[in-house]
Structures are given as structure tokens and as C-alpha cells.
Length: 308
Image 1 (cartoon, helix red, strand yellow):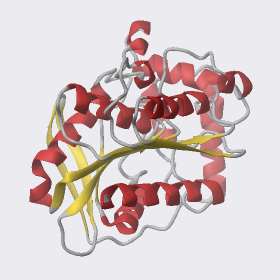
Image 2: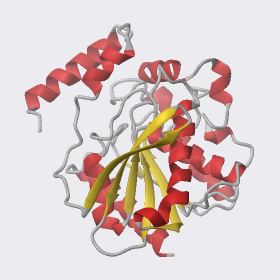
Image 3: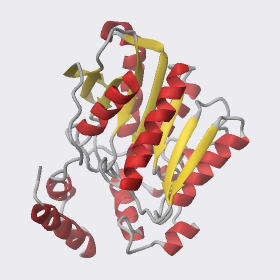
Image 4: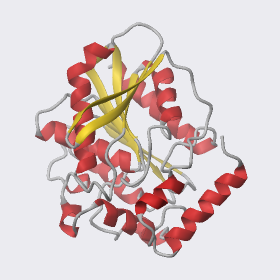
């Protein structure tokens, strides 16, 4: 674990780089962002395997966490956050272990391709490919192909929502649940009350989001693609049940809640939880009060979905 001084130094560098317009190349900035580690004590699980599968852009790394006991176990495809630009399997290690142990499911963490080297829809296709692989190979890893869920935090929540759309549109794997934590669901606009009210001073700011979008998208037209902005999809019916988590002071709050409301309007069992006084959480802080509660609620929702 890093010391408080190290975390403060890393945070200062990140804030400074954003303040000067992030003129450094993203690969350099990634060194500082990826230096952060997930909080919490690692939970023991029965087995952790690092594998690669054939992906749309070459070899796609996966990390598979297997719980104690005998299968077949339900499967949870986990997609890390980081604005489609940052994030590693290691940063997600503790939370994947938590879900594996708490829910008793196999967790498959996906090391999808990152922008700006790999623009939209590279991350989308990697996430969908991993989900397809899980469905097709479930029995080989003691998994249950009839109980597959997808989820993620921040950009990972966006990708999870899109995977569900793709699975429906492409007649792909049958999914039983989607966990969307603090997800961007409409990256075509910055015109919401939460963007207006929390543009700065609450962690992720409006200027940061503009930068992330610029790295991720080839052009402005891509932002209107439903596989980048799932809120813009014409039809959200017949999607898996969902839990959407949002923060009161998060710039992404309104689009996340709008997505949950549209799901409900179109007949999808969905609920959202807004955490008071909380800004954007791009990773799970496992040992703090509200985000810890969010993680607990997520595990309960996953367990319920798998038990149906």
C-alpha cells in the first residue's frame, strides 16, 4: 500500500496536468493515474487465473477469479473504470475478489483496449468479446452459462450497459443482470443540471469529461452512437434487470438516473440509488462509508439476480 504522502503527490500531479489542459500525452499521464491502487484488504479466493483469448484487436487479457466450493458458479463480467483511457486489472483486483467471495460467483475482469491509441468502439468490442467467450466457455471454467451478469464502474458502467445492448441487437449471450456504477450514458452533451451544478470542485469535472471524450471518440458523430451513448438507443426494452448507482455531486448523476428511469419506462426491472454528498467515484473505495455501502448493495443485487 502507498503512503498518504504518495497518494497526495500523485493526486497533485493529476490535478496539475488537468489544470494545464492535459497537454502531456495520455501514455505519460497514465503512469500517474495507474499508480493508484484500490483500497481495501485483498480477500482470499480459491483460484485466480490470468489468461488471454482471441480478441477483435489481437490477444485480450482476462483475469478469472473462482470462489471456494463446487460449481457451476454464476459468472460476472467486470469492466474497470478510468474514462476509457486509464485502468488496469491490478486496480480492480480487490473489488473482483470481494464480489467473488461475497456473491460466490466467478468474476472475469477484462483488460480491454484503452484510448487514445484504441478509439471507440475498441473497448466496446473487447467487452462484448469477453462476454461471448464467457458464455461459450462457461462449463470449461465451472461456470453456469444461464447465469451471466455484466457490470462496471464509471466508463466500465458505460461499457456494461452497451454490452447488454449488443447482446440484444446481435442475438448474443442471454444476460441476467447489469450493474452500472456511476455510468456515463450520454456522451453527446454536457447540458444537464448535474454538469451545471458540479462542473468543478467535486472530483471529476466538466473539463475532465471533455478531455476523456476527446481521447475516446474519433469524432463528434460517434458520441451519438447508442453503443457510445446507450441513453440514445431507440429501444431499451428486453434488457437485463439493472442497478444504477449515482452520486449526488457527480457530474454524471443525471444521465445515469435518466438511464435507469428509461429502463423502467420500457419495462425493464431497474432501480437506482443516489448517494448523498458523494461526487464521482471512478473506483470502489472499499473501506469508506458510502462507497463501501455501494459495494455492499451491488453484491446484494448480484446475489439476488443470480438466485432467480
